[in-house]
Amino acid sequence: MEIIGRGFLAGHLAPIRHRHPGTTVLAAGVSCAADTAADQFRREAELVRETARRCRAEGRRLVFFSTASSGMYGGSGGTGREDDAVTPQTPYGAHKHSLEQELAAGGTDHVILRLSHVVGPGQPPHQLLPSLLAQLAAGRVVLHRGAARDLIGIHDLVTLVDAVLQRCGPRATVNVASGAAVPVDRIVDHLQARLGVRAERSYVDVRGAHTVDITRLRRLVPESARLGFGPGYYRAVLDRYVLPAVAAGTAAQEVRTI
Image 1 (cartoon, rainbow, N blue to C red):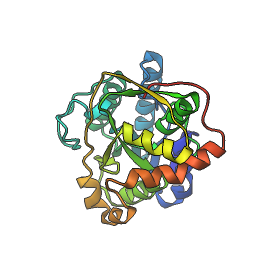
Image 2: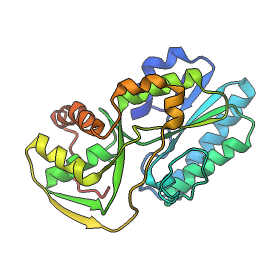
Image 3: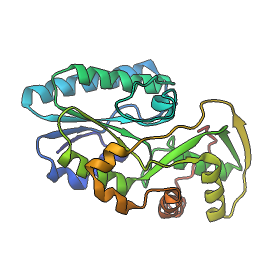
């Protein structure tokens, strides 16, 4: 497996690269859901198009990481299914969806993996867990009112990606998520309890909660039932990663909005 990128996902996927010859994984591009920079969107689009052309010429399969966040599914009526029409709610969601459509219209064999909120070591600071840790360290968290987040641990994600790539057909789109959207207030409650801190909370009114449907994922990877997905899964994920993250000093002193 060829991996394009040197960041969080690329590093954790490296141990399974030998298992997928003939596959190119595009683990580079825009990863910040709050990003609206046109030049970053343009660079990722150019990279996707060039990589797709090369994969088509060489007979390779391209894996593209998209999003299962509210930016993609927030306007879908709560279904969160891959085959349902979506109305992206953010520039980031619209950008990822447009690249999905380009791949679907092209001649390159591809797999689109729509990821929920991944949690694990080595995350960039703008992502969910580092952002929350930074806000807790600063004593104030700013939350989206009524928001919920589907968390998935990076090691479970790699297990699922490995299995999906072995079993899915060409031109597939699959949600890779836990299927359990957790109110952000509960995530903050759990982090505070584990860290022994308290932070002031304030709220902004934006998009509400949505669900990510993982029926297709479960059908492809029935052993995903052993990963413990369900209402309490998020606590196990946070317990596995939050204290090591704090010990490693990933909680930067910057307040961000999630």
